[in-house]
Length: 269
Ligand SMILES: C[S@@+](CC[C@H](N)C(=O)[O-])C[C@H]1O[C@@H](n2cnc3c(N)ncnc32)[C@H](O)[C@@H]1O
Image 1 (cartoon, rainbow, N blue to C red):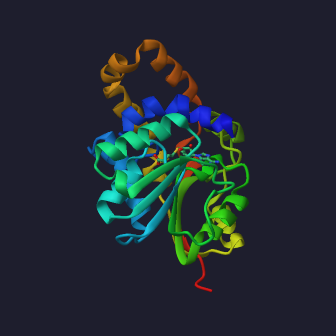
Image 2 (tube, rainbow, N blue to C red):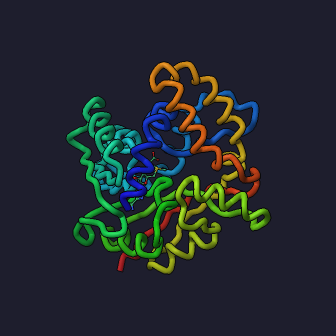
Image 3 (tube, helix red, strand yellow):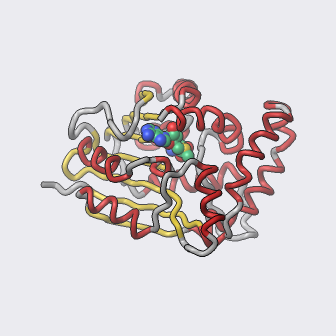
């Protein structure tokens, strides 16, 4: 697991800068949509977390919290008590800094922990969020079993992630997977099956890949517009290395990679 921690230690600083503390995808309605990258990324934060139906004071586990922007947003917007976990020391420091800077440190706590083996008691959360973090799970079935265990009866889980949409040209998909360190790339049906096999009841799902991975050319354009800013902060060598490592992300055809948002509930018993 330390390999994944290092992956995010190395990747997140530039990704964080580009996307304002949200190390995840974007959502653009069409090619003419002029919303800036940071706002397009925030649309995903909102779309995924809306499906949780959070209420004030609820206890949320943000499993794979990145540099903390999502936790801060949820603490501010809902007054939720957010516990964020990540494998990356860089993300942990950033999450704590960001939470304090936004005045919500009393509502958030962050830990370095593995979602395969959660250090929390049974039934200790009202909701669990996994925003693009299950993609790195060596054993998704085990992670869903852990989510079920730490949720109270009636608690909710929402997750979003990539899905496999076409088995044609598998070598393109293999390059994508090794770039992002994905042990598997489930179809929407397989994602739903992981959740139901663990004991969850599916309540909602969306496939919005064409507005997410399908808009990768808009992302490239937006990232290039921030080039001078990034250059001043990180230097040419770091930018070149980031581009070299992420080349494989762009290799699949637009219609090969989907994006699913799923919300499910632990039965009330
Ligand atoms: C693509 S980033 C998404 C971060 C954040 N949810 C966001 O949307 O900005 C994936 C996150 O999953 C975390 N992660 C991956 N494997 C994990 C594991 N086994 N246990 C805990 N966190 C994990 C990484 O540390 C990272 O924070």
